[in-house]
Amino acid sequence: MLSQITTSKDIREIKPYRLSDREKLVLYALARWPSYSDVDASEKVSMKRSTFTAIKKRLKDKKVYRLKYRLSFRYIDEEIIKCTFFEINPNIDKDVLEEFSKAVFDSYSNSVYNIITDSVYVGFNFVKDFAKLKKGRFKFEERWLKKKIFTKEYPKYINFSNKHSKIMFNYAPMIKHIFRIDIDDDEIDSLDKYRIKDRKIAKAKLSKNEKIVIHHMLLQSEKSDLYLSKQAGMNLQTFNKAKRRVLDRGIIRPIIIPMHKTLENEIIVFKHFKFNQALTFEERFEVLRYMDKKHPHHFMRIYDENECICISVYRDYPIYHKNIKKIEEYVAKNSITSHKPTIAVVPIKNIIYLKNVVFSGLYRKMSETDEENI
View: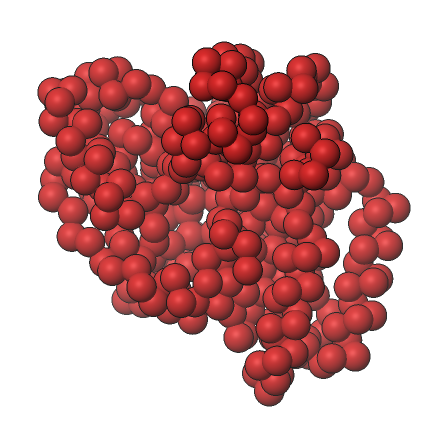
């Protein structure tokens, strides 16, 4: 299994870590300002630089978080963001489930987020166009329908236009909420930030060295620059210059990913709902504002003017049930949706495979590069 995929064995080995108040603050700062230097980040949380750096190292050594890089969405020229969701047949043979998992990661290496348990599958990937989408969907269903991997029906597919939707991977609001961190960090609290503006897709003109650097940074984000420069066949100075250029241009961006189990979270929740078409756009986006203000447990979200998907994390079932009840009451009271939302609760300990914010496969597909020809 690829090193970028967390297995059930890896999850079992993760130990919950009780963070001190200062450790919580440092973790939040890392997630909120991942591109900041320790000097700038420590200033944001009113902490000595030396203290900040020492705590950062301790959190890293304890494997509380991972540093990764993702592609900027404006440089992803695939037309469609596809989410696939289905419940897995509880009577499926373990060998078939393992075969399915291997096929998913081999065939859909351009997926950026996947959860596979013995009962649920959730996957996100980017697709070039609708012709590719229909062809891939048919092949997927035809193969696994014979294996009886689905429960009652075909998978649910939710497709978003890459140009006309918003997608985020952001763990900072979640960390701030679950640890009740009281800090004023100039977050914009206005409806305007939820509005959808057409994304202008840009072409990145890259040198050969820049392509190689991006490939290795996405593939092994946590490795040192010295290690990556050797893997890339460059001297350290050349590697760092190319790295600085692609970061300054915003082609790739750092992201801090806390380990859910380390933070003592028990469950991940997938939520999908369609907006009531009778609502104005302002009313639809007001729902997102409500979620961010009252229930910011989500770390991934994608939405357009018609529907929304959130993936959230909760400390335990009582907190989840309390929150989901309030959300359902709000949705019903304000007629947010005319369809019953799809909600899947996944215990973290039941995850068999987790592919969490991985853009290396998508980059290989887009740039037509791989480890053999770079």
